[in-house]
Image (cartoon, rainbow, N blue to C red; front, side, top):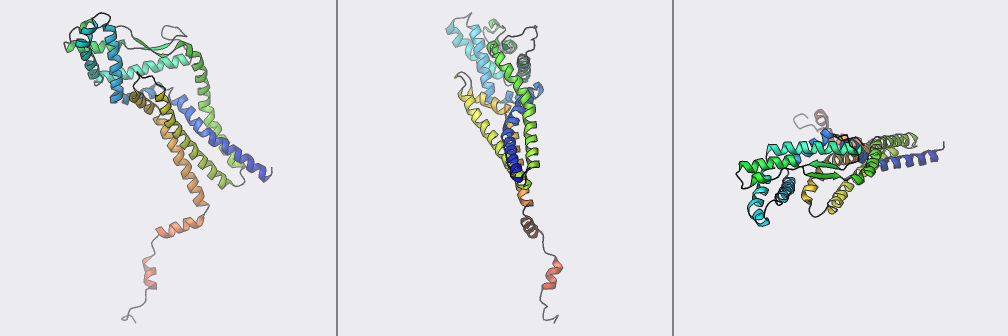
Length: 314
């Protein structure tokens, strides 16, 4: 194979490898990071102490209780007597250990339900093709118990019913399943392919030092593009949310879910720049000698030998 052909093939393979770096990191994060229930619950657990998330949960649960309660009471009595107590009680409940336990368990149940639906598995009742929902009745029951302990008027009349919140609509499950299966395959093969292309490109390169520098800089650029994509994705995600959804709470959830991916993107940048710098330095030994000469102090006896003799010594 001619030198020119080897260089061209090497450049193509290295370019493809660098292009696959951000997509490989993204697919691996989605396929292995988001699908692990234990890791997901651990990631979401600190959000139980986030003020924006607590406020969003308090508003959602409180409004649901008031809405159910309003079926049995006059609207004026409801707004003037019960509504303030309900919202205060829910906010107080979100600061307890019981809420953190309910938060973790709710995330675990919701995550398991979503995974079962995406993998086309049957639910606890042996059914398939149904929308994925989560039940808020346990949280409502704990809030009602708190109101009764505080002797809030008419708290005993709050209905504790199964309030299901849809997570995945039934009509979207088929499309989401196909995308999820593709993601599981890509999460493994894209990073492997990126590494294979890089190794092959370096092996074919006529000037391997230059090829290694290009690969390292391309990896750093891919990491930077991934970090930029996360910032843009956050803005687009929050912009598409309906007005009734708390944007600060949604932003906190987005940041928690993508924290590992952000770390991976900056690690790619740091690794690429470090390898490129070391490759350049090893290709310029004069620079290394200059650095060593500046860092190494001169021997003391060498100064003594070059010092002129004093008058007494003469």
